Image (tube, rainbow, N blue to C red):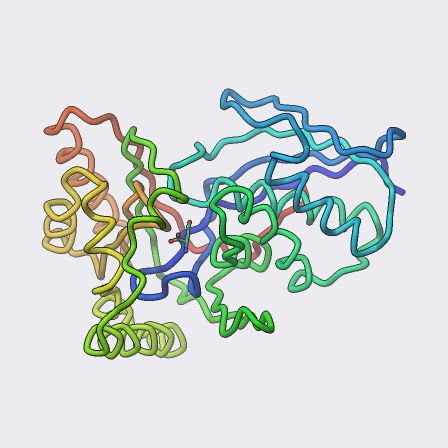
Length: 307
Ligand code: HSE
């Protein structure tokens, strides 16, 4: 076995407007760096070299839970050290737990000689999401592992479809300095929806997927409409409606909540518009005295990267 592997595991935007729990895409310029090393202890050890706090108990850490699921499937007792240089803040809405789980199972799989395909790794990484949010959703871990846009066509059985990522698509993120726990922002969602809303939502999911296949940026933009989840979760993000209106006016193709929030994402297809969107996002959060981190990224088509 190799002595170690160091991976870049990307941040991700889940839901993508209408696709609650089924759509997501990976970002190029934000992610965690995770180093995986075999140990002789027959146990999983978490080593935190980041500024953020991470659970060190392997039963409570999303990454070790995901790796334990992988090793359990193989019947392996091999131990590993998982060293985290976390760059994605937990509770930011851009797939912090997913990056940890996905990067760790990817690294372990590499060291073990790739017994599993990337798609198979998704189901292990999902076990980490269950620890993080109470639900084993795959819409962050799938794009984190496979790159680009992914669709979870079905959970039972797990059926993941990779979608094209139009060349010029840019994603601008604003991450306000507030924490929204995915578990909490799932609890407030309605358990039942109206048929008329479902019809709007289905149309938008299909429109978005069609736009990705045909490079139709306008169609992608107008399909970023979520009439079910966004209106409820928007209440947790100060200024969401104002920001959405302002970035659309600044030329964004569309805008919605990234994952369970509080990050907001806006899509565009020009650097100029993306820069304007960032400016608008910063101005509005600043006017509310809320610190914000903004950045613009291309769609990451590669997913995990060995460094
Ligand atoms: N689909 C999940 C949710 C994504 O919206 O709760 C969390 O990042």
